[in-house]
Length: 437
Ligand SMILES: [Zn+2]
Image (cartoon, rainbow, N blue to C red; front, top):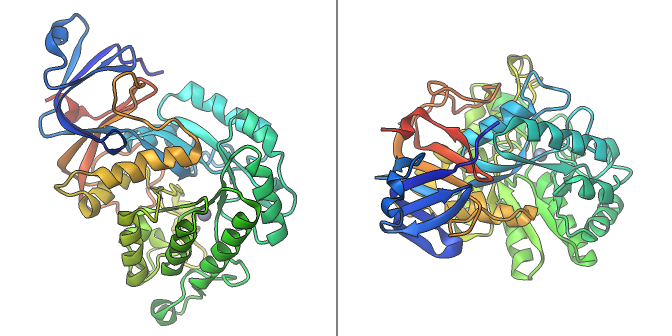
């Protein structure tokens, strides 16, 4: 188990927290797991106190720790890919204090017993804090609703059948009505399965060239459009997982303009890659929804920058070589991403500048969507912080990773911006050797 930070001083560090209007350089003092002092020379002579640990902040950033709305930690059932301990360690190494975990485990998290088991395991592990997402329907079969009241009481923060779409409009309507009672978001994996039957990648020029069956953009858009209408009709919160198309952005932008409680997330790979990455049949690039075209990625980047897209979520989906070292058609979809997310994003969205929008998208807004107290840089707050070296260049794979899996096309890519230390719930849950210099 990790220890509470009794007296930890970040000296002369640049701190950002757009929710507090904060961008200043000074000291940040953590005592007994709480932020107690902030500002130029705020540490004073505390640095000489017995047991004080001082971290040199020169050239570094301190941000509110991140919150992931979408990860697959594979326990129970597929612990050879990942388990709660390795997944929460990977999250901590990625700068996350909170991880919301999808219910498509074996068995599915559709009961209080599974939700409670996950929370018990997480409490033994340390690392980031785990928040279960319960299933919408029993066995994620799309028919019968789960007992959302029990899932909520046991600690679920949202419901989703992620991995499969709730195809029935009637079931989706009842799910929205039921979840509304607890102010829980219903998270949709938007995919019309009849339009995507047998698909291995995005439908377009590249799928034609490769002779692979395509997953058309409209299969995502059609479900989001329907769900927005349902959410409006019943007056419920609706959140779209991993949006990937220009059409999805347009529908959500319109819904927000009309004041509907609709939110969405995007993954780093949909922001940065296109279906051209599939040309070598690299199964590490097989993901659901699939990598789209440059126009989609460009629209997603713009929508993230202007706030139409609320959050960046990793959709951390670890797989072993068993699921990936095979024919493209047969390979399981998904990328691992908890440890790479920040390094992938900084170059595109924050390089050299204040990473204000990134902090919102990685921390404040996802926390609000999941009903988690947002990590904050202010005196009195529980220390949930991430220490960043914005200049550090590193290569995932060359630098040790905590996840059990390695399924990502970014494995040998040089990334900029490295997480050096993460605090969750007042505890240091991750520390890179470079912290002390
Ligand atoms: Zn999904």
